[in-house]
Image (cartoon, rainbow, N blue to C red; front, side, top):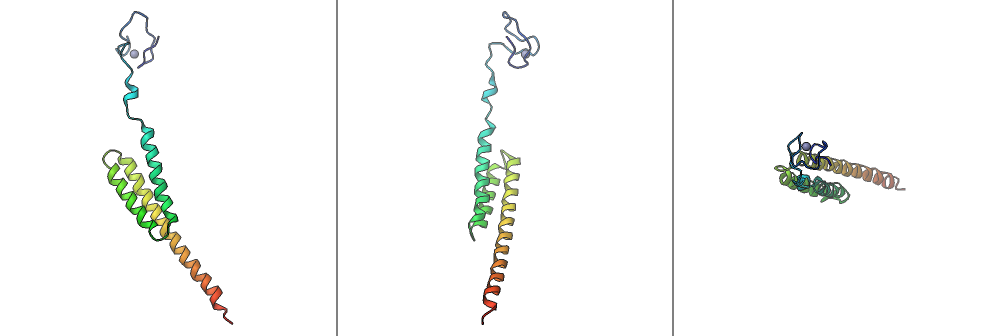
Length: 120
Ligand SMILES: [Zn+2]
């Protein structure tokens, strides 16, 4: 039998661990801590919305800013690192969306010049 806290060996008749003083019959409270996986799953869901909004023309950029701002203020108190992270992702996705839109307009202009310029 081993101590559930410090893993030192215990004898059958002992009710207290000699090394760390933990009671043998005391339930291990490691499971009572909130599971970090739940928040992480929520996180990738919001990242998916932010980066997925890039595919939506015109309103996509504003959706990105809105979602990342809302999640930033929602997480700021409890998860400051996650709040900073999603805010960064929001602006990166927005910048990527602007670059994509400019690229699209430039290629459209070039396309019009090529097709419309010949004319005769
Ligand atoms: Zn112990």
